[in-house]
Length: 349
Ligand SMILES: Cc1cc2nc3c(=O)[nH]c(=O)nc-3n(C[C@H](O)[C@H](O)[C@H](O)COP(=O)(O)O)c2cc1C
Image (cartoon, rainbow, N blue to C red; front, side, top):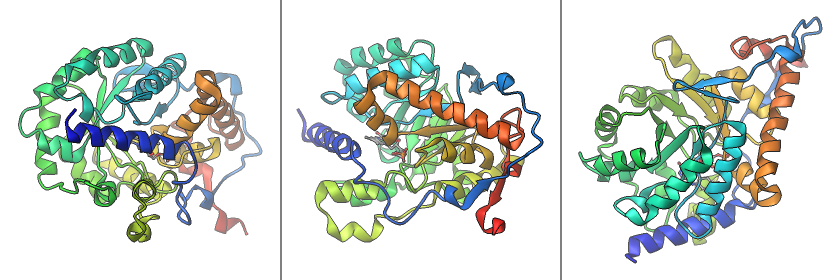
């Protein structure tokens, strides 16, 4: 096994074990959802039985506007985790993101496990995943990525932008020169929608605009307040020098509300993630403009604790609470559930 592959595997293992705990949470920075409250609407006429969460995901109908964020694959029990996540996503009919596919590039021995995940997922959407640096390294030739897209019928491809993580990671690759050119070529050549995401430091309106100009179809905020990937790398490497970056990033609520302003000129899917760890945060993300919400670490932790059914139950429970919030704020449909249902807490006192 080549050294790069060995590094990747040990890094992925460490990421999983750190993220099964709450050690890598932000310390003082929050998602910002706590600044908002819901505007109670006492004369609501919402019919709870008629609230429908079915949503369009790039032309596919999904059961809930929710996705399981990219996490893992290819090492030890990662494939088992992905299979279980696929089972949960299939039961809910929601999109599943794979972790970085770097390990599977030009290695056909991984094809069968990817095909197995596709089959466990049934007709629910599957999203591929690769880091920005790796995309740049592919040069002009995306044939291998196209092959992976084909063998497991991916429905969208996610490129993660993780400059802070690369900076703090031992043997990291904080080299993003050429990113926009690579993305433009990739979006033009790959035949499925391309989404860009962060990994917990958030995407600003300016960065989102630059990415949309490269032809991406979706922006996943992966904002600050949930899992800190600076923290993950600091913990993994005992790198106390990086500590000042532990809480670096743009809060998820800020990312969603500012990127939402781009809709007057651009058509894209806005995916709200980063610290969506409860139904109220999720509901506030929708109200601020997210089309879909997603989570990573809490899903992994729930899977480990309560298995596939635990994940299914968690998501279903969140959407029961979401229905109740819609009823109490007077929104019959998701489009009606906009920022008019929110009030800044400071205005209440
Ligand atoms: C164990 C674990 C592994 C992850 N691996 C990847 C990855 O391979 N690619 C990626 O784009 N994001 C990865 N992420 C980042 C998540 O997709 C997500 O953006 C981030 O954790 C913030 O969401 P959260 O606060 O809900 O955890 C990973 C997250 C976790 C918890």
